[in-house]
Length: 229
Ligand SMILES: [Zn+2]
Image 1 (cartoon, rainbow, N blue to C red):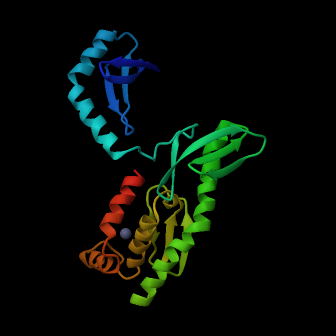
Image 2: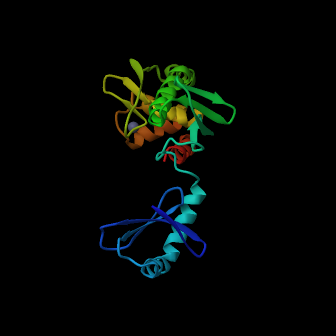
Image 3: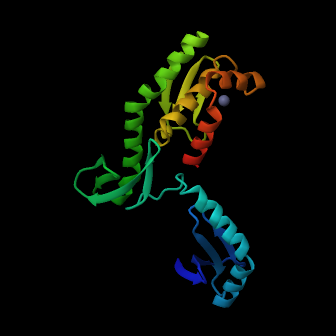
């Protein structure tokens, strides 16, 4: 990958055996150009110039949204979320593995860079187990005193594509990754799942129940989408 520039726009150039020149704007606002091995600088600049408005529009959109957190590379200085705050990864060599929250940093010691991702995942799991019960239980108790229903079982799980789930038997699962978002967001997901104990669907009745129980759920959902994109 080479770093190139056209006017004010910096971009990464990746050459391959493809036939056309392709441009993507990543969610962090960076621009990647993919081009055939034989494409000249002028050919590439021509394509970029033609699509300059499109590139600027997307760069602006992504920059306004702030960094995306779903695509992390687990490298030094990268920002990672914990309870809605950003922390900077500081990775150092050590014979033993450890992850420590230290001011605005997450200090990671390990003897191999490939360990950073699994160590971070393990740390998030540990933090979720430690902190999420205190965040979700008040919501569960409030729901119980209002609607006389409570889940049979609550588990914290690593889930790929959902924040929470509620089975027909009344077992609720919450995604461990929620510990990256805020307390408000975690409470919202719990409220969403609790309402399924009464309404096993997303009908109008379901949403009026959710709105009655948590009137500001929409704001919380927007925040969750923002953090966890
Ligand atoms: Zn649902």
